[in-house]
Image (cartoon, rainbow, N blue to C red):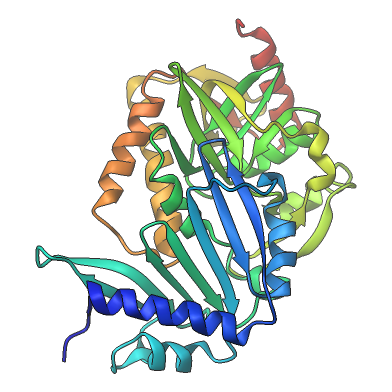
Length: 367
């Protein structure tokens, strides 16, 4: 028994899905996202829970309605996603034995393209055809999504990969006086703590987790995506007083972190921020005073590599399967960062000392 669709079968399935979504929902509404000025996305919401979640997590990129957009995402609810997927999309098989089940379409050249996936444990399904995406879930309740991480990040990643001069990456960005620093590191390297501490201490802020990198006239810019942050309980305790305006949302079981809505800090948010240099954080328990140093060529290459690989690892950990375009994404990131200056910051356990060190470094750099 084959485990793929032909292109014609897939087109029929998606047409039938649109009819089903409209029949099971009590109306819908559309909201729009502006992703760094490089892509505009229409979200068609068939669930009130989904609207509330989008308003919370993607508040900073919501924009006015427009007739021109680059992609459409349909969001709807299914009471039993596994039964629905088995009946509507998936060929018979041992579906419950797989955490992720890939849905494939056969191309005219005999190659197979992943056009959807079922996340069995999360009870969600992702489907895509050209610039139209479908995202179904059994629940869009906030407490449910905290365990899964940032909503729609896989789809936004794929949508941004169609832009000519911008990419969604896993990284952080803060700055002062229009001098931005892109923090390049994998998870658990201190970039989120450093970025949030800097924001609390009055720095300009873009993101601590996901952001849009865009290039224009040989200049690099960072733009925000999500209006939430995640902090470990230990770091939250250290930042407790400074985060008095943050709104506690819940606990992320996926990351084991506390999640906060930081829209109250919108006065510090920069929506399109020029990047002056890249910063590679290193944590040290032996250093008393933090310091910033110029990276050597090996450290520079490692920092660039970590931006690209960390982004892909984040996508893969959420179930997005490896694809031939991943190599192109890595080359794009290398191209975008290749002309930047790279520094490393040696971090101490004193997070406020680290922020002071960063401020002195930015104030000492040329415009």
